[in-house]
Length: 164
Image 1: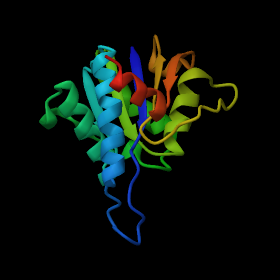
Image 2 (image 1 turned 180 degrees about the horizontal axis):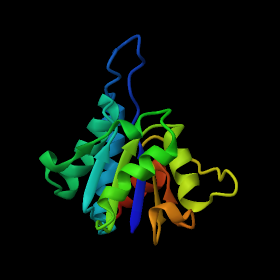
Image 3 (image 1 turned 180 degrees about the vertical axis):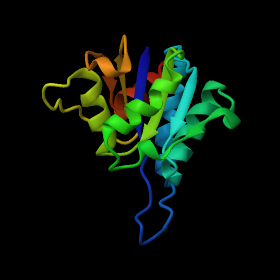
Image 4 (image 1 turned 120 degrees about the vertical axis):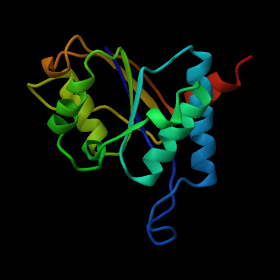
């Protein structure tokens, strides 16, 4: 199974927008990331998002660009910022027949999920940037022996999106 983890794009501060929507720059950032994924021929069997607006918007842009049905995006509180990784992994086990799963979420939970996917012995630090993406391949979700296949920053995805 391939697990793709993306931190939402740049969002407004809580003072400016209590729902913390994506800024126009954040929307563009996610559009470019999605365009790069499309050029890389990455497709998803399942897209899952945190219920927070900035993560939902991120998932919706990814879905739109990659041709994933908007109404099939799953939303779960297990991808909220401070939910334990074990809760997200438990949620994902109900989708164990899916091969390529995209998660749109937040820090620190995405980092904790990534760490739990690759190790149960110690914390593994995986660097996330808004609009960047990490791919981790796993044989079993609860095995803690995943393989980090690649990590792409928003700048790298932008270059890929603009390549001929």
